[in-house]
Length: 303
Image 1 (tube, rainbow, N blue to C red):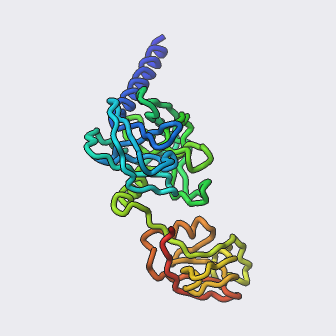
Image 2: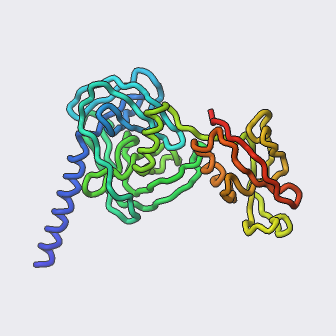
Image 3: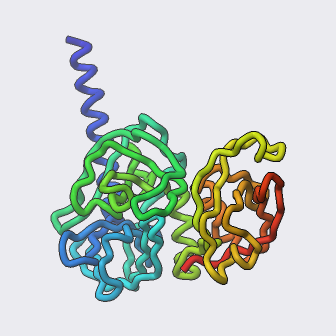
């Protein structure tokens, strides 16, 4: 009997804590009207900025958000990033509480809450755990997502753009179902902040490109030229006037490193083409014949 009472008390305490977590974030949770059908969610991250999911914005004008107290505001699209499915909105005279980011990153097995405000009826929540942490991973759009949080919490319609919370109500990440065929993922807050900073400064995310097509190939011992790696990227096409062509890369070359980093698959290559490398001449190692050649290639800005 004593154990039953203790278990009930523990369950009640946990239940109250989870409800408190939702209440804590609710004033910073908004409804985003950016498409003709289901509205979605957004989160206030500064006095005049709301982060939401990019895929829920089917238009770039006539955007509205609705606050927890029913007030409606016009929003301006600052910028969006399809790789992470994040978009940033600016709202004048918003004056809403700002959500607090978790001080520690998510852990597998951690109890979490997925929260959204898809309508004026108030916040909605579902509970679960962090089922996986991962990345890099190729998304349904063909881009590479650097980091993600996977959860088994149910993403009700309109939850995209809302927060993934820890048991204290602090934000672990921003939810989206737009990257992986409807599978609920969250972009970790550290990455969200990086994207938000870039969007607020320049309206877009710098990502480089070389202008080539490649496929993964196994490197026979004779072609490794003393290297330990057993895979590289065979260049099967080089675009005319592209950075790759201007840098001297040829069809048939096997790309094995960029800027001193080993490349064993296309995910490696895409992750190395971050904004900090755009416009900089980088050493690129290729196997041409059975010999290593080093070329200088300057990544361009992906449009």
